[in-house]
Image (cartoon, rainbow, N blue to C red; front, side, top):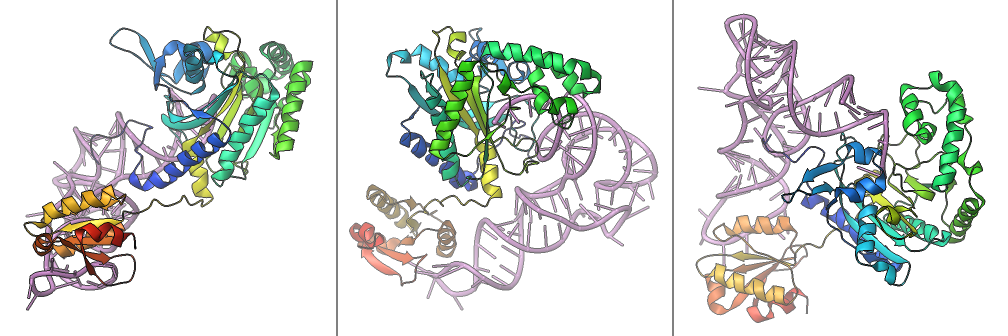
Length: 424
RNA sequence: GUGGGUGUCGCCUAGCGGUCAAAGGCGCCAGGUUGUGGCCCUGGAGAUCGGGGGUUCAAAUCCCCUCACCCACCCCA
């Protein structure tokens, strides 16, 4: 065991993982493009206030999960714990309100949360996400949900369960929380310790408590859906009907709440079908919601927005469980095998010429035996070995040996090598 | 932050107080007559048994501490 390791809860992305990651990234780009979304990349660090003001000082993310540090200029920076606040900051900073609305953006990158690592939970986690900013209509919610759903589908995860809810606006939520507290107050001493704590900090959380899931008071708790304003209810109904039209299946789940304060109205989650999931309690693969007040919290004008984030490690985990195969990366076309005194220089020039012709070339290691180099070339999966020794160098030719297909080794002039490899 | 499990070469594993100055498989390196791969054969390198302390005549094997990883809670993607 090396004495230096990757930081706790963070891991290396190795060459053998590359195919699956590339599949997820390419699929995200492709599908987001089909929906008219453009890539945005923000810094992985931000002024702490970007998150403190938007997620809520009381939220777990801000109060205990953020990596915060002073930079040399004395400013307080934070490693981004999530993507939405940063994207909204960029929207404001670059005056995107003066572009055609809504502005549709997607992103792909690492987030950081100082949490205790666990199955499907890491301190550096990767997320892909999309934001649709500037459209208050239910159509925008339905669109981002459909986008998230389409990405999952294209990745072979068409059995994830979509659960949606409306948590109303801040005012309706405040009223509902009071109603909830009234409801739970008489049962306080029979609820779990965690729920007693939640009663003070975030009563909504009692509803999706694991410990108290079977508690009568939880089962009989008033539903937030009965406390929505007329506008909230209509918004939610329209979102549902649009999803029906789009053929996106969902369950209405009045219990789901989201961890961040800025959500309003529509919220949703994608989960694996098996309730007591494989990834333990960390089963949510993706989630999202509407955040109409967020940009105001950042100091901008009232601006509606809605979006989602998908956990890439959890997506990969689910793909692996379902045996989804990512397309394998193409192996190199040619492995050069330099021999003797003049071979290495000739092989170098050959590699340049082949690459200029668009062929992928793996350079051989001069000094190793022909046998050793052929073994290496074979293991690399290269289609051809290109043997260049003193004799070939002197005559301006190369021996091409098919490695993956049947056929005998043959000699071609260096200038004809690319065409020969292409099978012309 | 709380609880439980695990920690032997790059990977997987054997060993569970003395014959272990640690064994095997995979992988890696080199050979198997002069410049020819995949299979096979032979050889080689590579581990102070996570780290520290203790018990003992003797510890990879027992005890304590610590670190890391895994799992669960909290919370979240």
